[in-house]
Image (cartoon, rainbow, N blue to C red; front, side, top):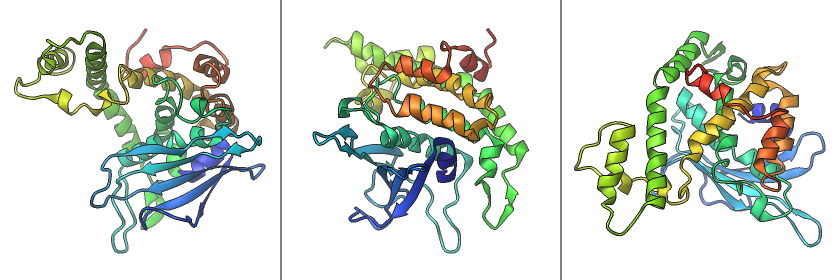
Length: 313
């Protein structure tokens, strides 16, 4: 993954000894500009499960980028927290295809977090509109549908000449398309549930009954004695903004076409540097719609997303 990011974004990622860390499994990496050598930021990686650790996958900002009074830029620092299968004996940590998609997704915010040059913390890193914040992560998931990208790292660890089989990749993509309707019914039901609670709530509302009714109508029937809404953690942090996941998919599908049409596909350096300069570096210091237009070189289109989910216009 580091090699892929270094290639497309013009970066250099090096492991260094951390001056301090919260666990011996944690590693620290300096992200620099490959051409100038300028350090851009730091990334902690905490990749394996252990007792008492946060049991999901996420990226957390620790220090945000900003211009200091002395005109020096404060380099950002972030942590990637994951729970992948740990190595065992003479076996390295072996990841499924879905694991790798998760890895690329969760590492997605780190390049914008580290290459951002916004003057103020409020506009740097992941401090962008909530319905845009997932775009970098979801765009980078497309790299895993590229055989050229997979061939750069995905192989049998006992025999690196045995690459990820093309037919398996094709079947994975085909299976994703086969169930994508159900996936988006689920996403839309969560988005509608979120919006309903934030726009129509009153003290007399039976929240469990109302949420179950929305899920049943839009997604799949819900047993009356269950309460998904009690488990729906995105109601805090993504307040009235869960729809942003689906909206980000629309933008990401469009942005991915720039690489699909580039001479070197998803390993095209020119397209990668454009993504870095027009999306990542500016953050929210300009309207993200302007940034998307600058990257695409045209008006935004719904067509790539509709094509991806099998809907013909």
